[in-house]
Image (tube, rainbow, N blue to C red):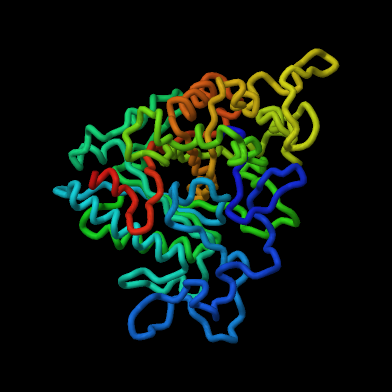
Length: 432
C-alpha cells in the first residue's frame, strides 16, 4: 500500500497548503445538478419522445438534491472517468470473460452497450432498457464507470498485434497468495459513487448488459468515508486506522500526465492507448487481529508516520517532507529503515510513482471471528513496469508492513483513453 495521496474531484476542497483531499463537506450554492425542477437546463430529463418524464425529474416545488447527490462527472473526455476523481464512498470492481464463441464483433457491441449505459447513469438518467429503479430518487452522486482490457482479451478477439507490451503479466512476488479465480479477466469494470444505491444500480446494469457476450469472472465490493463525514477535508484512513494516501501525485504537478497517462506521441504503446492508463488491481487482506495487538508506537514504526495525524515520525505535519536521515538521541533512525512510508517514497524508487485510488473492503468473519477485511488496491500509471512493479519488488524484500497484510488477488488492465462524443470506450481498438 504505497504511501501516496489522492486528488479530489472536479470541484475540490483544499487544505491551507493547497493539497486536494477527498471527503469535502457539502458546500452551499447551486451545482449543475442541484435544481432538478429546471431539467431542461441540467439535462437530467431523458430525451424521450412524447414528453416522457425524466428518470430523476421532480415537481417544480421539490427540494433540490444536496451537493453530494447532485455532483456529476462527465463520461466523455480525454481520459476515462474514475481515474483522477477523488475517492468515492462506495465502489464495485468486476471482471468478465468473453463467452465461448464471442470475439471482436461481440466485444465491440458489448463496449458500445456498456458505454451508452455508463453515459446515461453518470448523467443521473435511467438505463436505456429494463431499468431497475434502484437509484430513481438519487442524482448522479459522482458516479464513475471505467472500462479496461486484460491480457487475455486480445487473444480472444484476434487482436494480439494490438496488445501493449506494458500489459505483460505482472511478475510473481514472494508475498503473493493469489486466488486465480479472483484474478485477471478479459474485461474489467470499476464503478464508484458517493451513494451505495447509485453504485449498485450501475453494477447491476453493467452485469445485465453483458448478456450472452460475457460471463462474470469475479466481483468485489468496497467503501470509503462518506463526503462530509469529517469537520474539514482530510486524507482518508484505512482499516488499520492509518491515514492512507499522503504522497499521491497531483494533477498540478508538471509531470503528472507523463507518469499516469500514455502519451499520444513518443510512446511505445499502440495508438489506441493514447490518453489511457494501466490499472493494477490487488485485493490485499489486512491481518487486523495481529495488527491491533501491536502497541501504538510499534504501529507507527511499521508505517513510519504518526497514527493521529499522518505526519512523518521525523516531525512536522502530514505534508511535511520526511527526513530519512534524522536520528534520535541514541543514534537510531527516527523513521525505521523498513518503515512502509520510507520504502514507498518515489525518491527511494528511481522516481517511480502511481496514482492510488483504493477502496476498503469487509467480507464478513470466519468461524473464529477473524475479519476478512482489507484494501481493494487500485493504482494508475503510464507504465506498470516503471510504476507498480519496482515499488512492489522493494516492498517484497523488506517492508515491515508485510507481516500484517496478504495479497490474495491481482490483475493488470489496459484502460484506453476516454470516448469522444458519439464514440464508445475502446472503439479505436475494436474498429481500428
